[in-house]
Length: 430
Ligand SMILES: *Cc1c(COP(=O)(O)O)cnc(C)c1O
Image 1 (cartoon, helix red, strand yellow):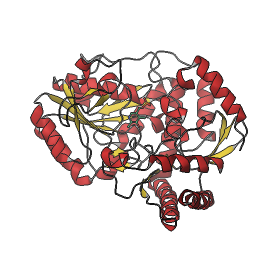
Image 2 (image 1 turned 90 degrees about the vertical axis):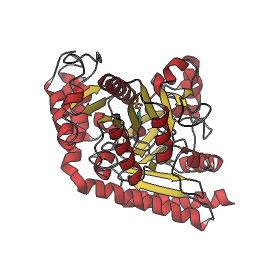
Image 3 (image 1 turned 135 degrees about the vertical axis):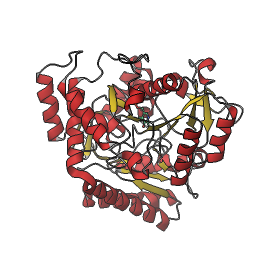
């Protein structure tokens, strides 16, 4: 496989863009090699600037549930673009998309659109703090909620206490309001509540996709919800990834647990930059202009982005539960195939699936939290990634990411990937 053009493009990009990328994971740091510069997408496939073709399990990190260049979404975007790119004034398509989403979630009366998942979460946290009149928040180690200051936090001297910045540039004064708990561990959450009586919200990825795929235990989520209620703390489900991915109603629908606030992103924008956060009216009405909590955005609810989102959500509603069964059956076919291939070659692989999301860890133990995930063999993953890439299979370039199925995939594509993986597992073992 020739990647000369990508290698050259990467060198040139590094001259003018830090690390050559606009988001760090794209740089392939954890798997080595050069990131592939993409020319275009075609359904299930990516084509790089050297003309290599890959089946794409990254799908722009989640948004492209209908694959690349879906004709309906494309048509909606072109039609909207012809009417003007942005107005900074209300448009009908915003209310239409808002109605579709609020209809799906019984706990969401109103929703506000922003331009990224980061912005959605940041705004949701301000809303929770303003609504409860409390300052502290709890997050779980290994969950990612975007790159806003108070969420770039790692455990300080110990768990369940105030976090410390995980990046230079984040003042300790901001992270001292963020407490860290262990995923799927209710005792660590209880300790957080013991350490502070000023907790505005607990934020969680109910199906974590940013430490690899690690779904929460149902009992854990139920106890979490009960603890939040007892402490008059809002529960935020960050469904930026799991929303419309794990199921039509996301993790909220799968577990049947109603969070106070839900954040969305990725699929809700159909490939355009969109985020959103929603809650019951009493909470959302605290936002300006009706309420005192400030939140705004020049390009929020952008008509092109809203049109792409609406076209996607309409198609998902049309497909309904049947569509998600099909996703899950393809995802299971892939993960079962990978597991079997690994086993034949004495490689331990942990796999899991939720709707169109799948994950696999080179790990001999079940992964329940970030500590468990970190025990995975990242060197073996890096080799696997590289060898699969050479065979035209584009998996996420880190052990700690989730893979995605799109409607453009089918059984024979999956079987082809399994055959290639079998061969690669053989090489890894040798
Ligand atoms: C991707 C993601 C975010 C951040 O969204 P951006 O659009 O990258 O800012 C937040 N939360 C979760 C769960 C995500 O997966």
